Length: 136
Ligand code: ZN
Image (tube, rainbow, N blue to C red; front, side, top):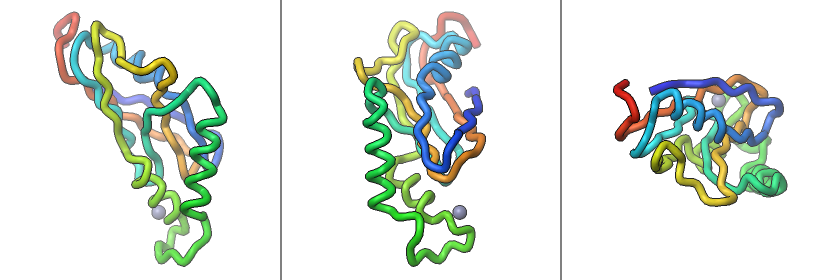
């Protein structure tokens, strides 16, 4: 398992982390198997979705903001319950098949870190299970 950090730049934002995951897989000499990408935070998420049109992620974030408004009748004293709820809705991890050292992603797919309570530095965990080109 390896980690890398991502600095987010807004309160609510999507950061394309595909190249960061890819770099870790190359360091791991990953060849054929499955890659787990996980964010160890309770107000962020990791998803796979369209990366070609930036408007898609804006629409996703706007829709989540509408579904789960920042202000509401929440009990959590920290005041960021909306971020916790959105983190649950979006999910904290994804799995990607790795074939011949490359992640199997669709033409338009990218891996995104979603931050719902930024800006912060978020830690991404990458775990690969499978065959490697060299022994670890
Ligand atoms: Zn909280």
